Image (cartoon, rainbow, N blue to C red):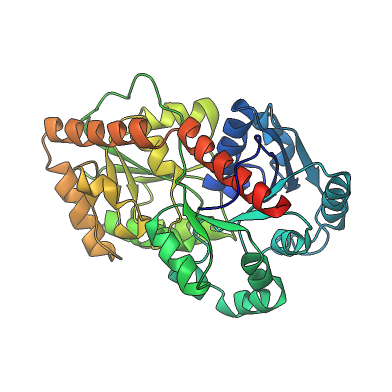
Length: 382
C-alpha cells in the first residue's frame, strides 16, 4: 500500500461486537491481534458489547484495556448508546490514530461508519457468498443503512486470505484491500498421534448452520464399525444445539456423538490432546482459528475447500473433504482418514504444524498490521 512516510507506531482502538467466547474464533483472533500489537509497543484499547461471558473472559485481554457496554433492545443488533458515547469521547480527546473495526452487520458497524477517525475494517469472512445469502434481507437493509458507508469509508479493508480479498473487491470495486491472515500461539510439544480404537474426532467452533455440523452428524451414521466418537465442542448460536441434538437422535448416533459445550483454556488444550483428528465440514469461513489451533497442537486435519485454507492441502497438511460435501462425501473422507497408516497421519499433522509455525505467528501478523495502521494514520494526517 503506497503512501506518505510511515509515522511512529499508532494508537489503535479495537471495536468489536463481542469480546468473549460467544464470538467463537473471533474472540481469539481479535484478542490475539490486539495483544500482539500491544506487545510490539502500540497503545491499544478495546471497546465491546457486554454479553453473558464477557465479564468472565475480560481477563484474557490483558494487558489490553477492555471496556464493555450494555446492549439495549435485541442482542442480535447490538444497539449500545453508551459505547458510541465512549468512542466519541475518546475521539474528541484525540486518543486513537486508527480505529480497527471487526465484523459486519451489527450496530458496531454503524458506530464505526460515523466515527471521525481513519479506520481499518476487518470483515472476518462476512462478505463471502454464503454469508451474504444467509439472512439476506436483513443484510440488504443493513447495507443500505450503514454497512456500505462503513466499508466505502474505510482507509483499508483487511482480508484474511485471497478468497476473502476477491469477495471484498466484488462487493466494493476499487477498495484498498490488504491480506493479513489470523495467527496462533504454537503448542509445545505437539500432541501425540493416538491411533486408539475407537477413534475420536473433534469439531471445534460455533454451533452454526454454516459449519456443516448437521451433515457431519448424518455422515456419522454411515461409518463402518467400530464407529468412532465425534465430539462437538463450541458455543451454541441461535438455538442450533437443540436442533443438532435432535439430528443425533434421528440418525441413531446419540451414543457416539457428544456435545461438549464451550471449551477454552486448559479444557480446550486437554481436548485437543485427546483426539485423533479435527474435522471442519464448513460451508463458509473467513479463516478458522480452530484449524490453526488444531494444527499447532499437531492434530490431523479434515477440511472442506470452503474453509479457505487450501495451502494446507498443497503441502499435504490436511485431508480434503471437497468443496461443499454432502453427508455421504463427508463419511467417505472420514473413512479415507481412518484407513491411513499412522505414519501418514503423523506426516500430515507435522506438515500442517510446520506451516503454522512459519507463517501464522502473531508477531509477524502484528508487525504487518502496525505498518498498515501507521500508513493509514499518516495518510489521514497528510
